[in-house]
Length: 263
Image 1: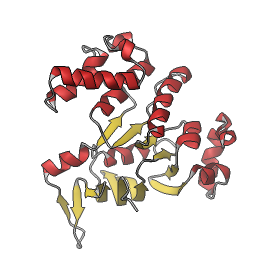
Image 2: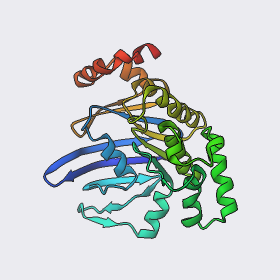
Image 3: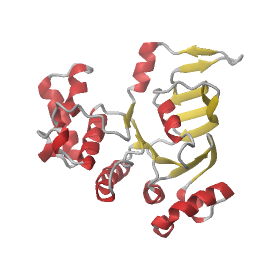
């Protein structure tokens, strides 16, 4: 049996006196799509950011393909920081796409995708742009390679952001509500790219209120509420026969989008 792509054990995250995540335990299987759903403020995005080590967990451990990320904990519960070089290598396995596109406004789509390849990975301009163009082809934007962000729609900008993350050849992709700022038509463009990635076997963790996407593409659904994972299971269990009253209440709010009819 293969190692989980990401394993979170007993994770707690606090901000000051506020506990945002409480005793989180979850495994992200290799080659599958895991969706984190739940009401706003339930801790979904914070959990995703901890997986990417953009936030440091207060306690608990995260492993990525069997390697500990950020900190280890000894038998006495004391935390020890992982060596920076090792941590960078582990983090390099993870790509992340945010709610906001965060594109460089003064660079073309091609420039945005190729920049990190040149500056961080020290690739030649030719090689970096070849790889970047291949990713723009993948997300259907080869004809927009020379356009600046201001000349692109929101959906196109988010697809450039996905191409930028994919160009670094991550083993795992994290998506933090990637369609939250898009209208329904543009949302479909982005979700179609994500569906294609899922079909290719990319390991993905997706925070989203797009319940239809979770129902049809997600293979594992985790429902969070007040910083806890209340229920985890395949979509057939989550959407057909909710076992938890809070989950059922939440789904009653969202299933009017027709997600229940998609299974």
